[in-house]
Length: 217
Ligand code: B1M
Image (cartoon, rainbow, N blue to C red; front, side, top):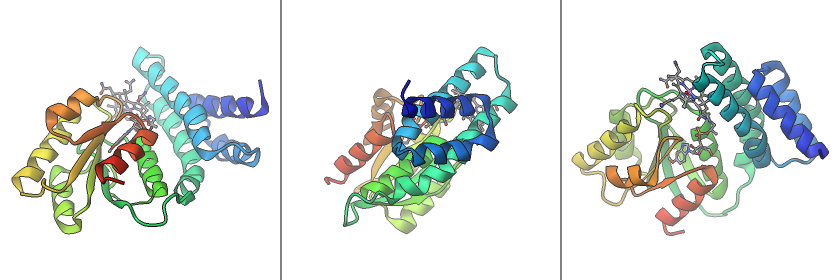
């Protein structure tokens, strides 16, 4: 295996095993060896957290182990996030995205990656965080008048909050001229269509392409 491959495998293992104390050092080591930040995310950290999730589904991992894996991933992301954001591709602002994970859902890792890449692509991103109430999305949409609202949902039980937010935006007369993009592991194109979202993206790279299309950039 190449040095790069070995470093990515090491990072994957650190996330799977939840070795929080090794995560920052291994991430910096990979960067020092010239591995691109997005490659570290996509080929090291994401496969690691997906394997931890699969073990959790099978009952091989309990919640504390999943939490340790998530923390190892977040420790690495704290190093990578500014680098992902710093890669400004566009000189002028492409638009304003209001982003958040829906109510009842505390998953934030994927949403944060989406936000970082949108910012790098030239969008101004207001990140409302996780567990964002329907009313908060609506109030912030009224206050900030973004071009796009982006909602992430990782739980099958919280996907419905995307629908409720879209309905609430329409009820408050805020839907016209505002694009809605949805995403998160259980979210599909069919779901997006069903709830009246303008589009959906499968991953963070696709989210940038979708957001650009939505604002006609
Ligand atoms: Co949770 N969790 N979790 N979890 N967790 C899942 C989602 C689960 C599938 C695990 C499993 O059972 N295999 C399962 C959901 C099952 C279901 O709904 N059917 C689950 C569960 C059950 C739970 C709890 C209920 C566990 C419990 O308490 N018993 C609990 C929920 C608490 C709550 O939210 N109320 C819980 C808690 C946690 C942790 C806190 C331990 C941690 C989250 C830490 C954090 O985010 N701050 C966690 C994690 C890490 C996961 C898994 C393992 C990984 C999620 C992740 O970060 N993936 C996950 C299993 C899995 O997905 N394989 C799981 C990496 C990330 C880069 O990918 O988030 O998919 P993802 O984002 C991608 C795309 O989806 C897309 O782009 C991103 C980047 O490419 N995308 C968008 C995301 N948002 C987008 C928005 C867009 C466009 C694209 O436009 C706006």
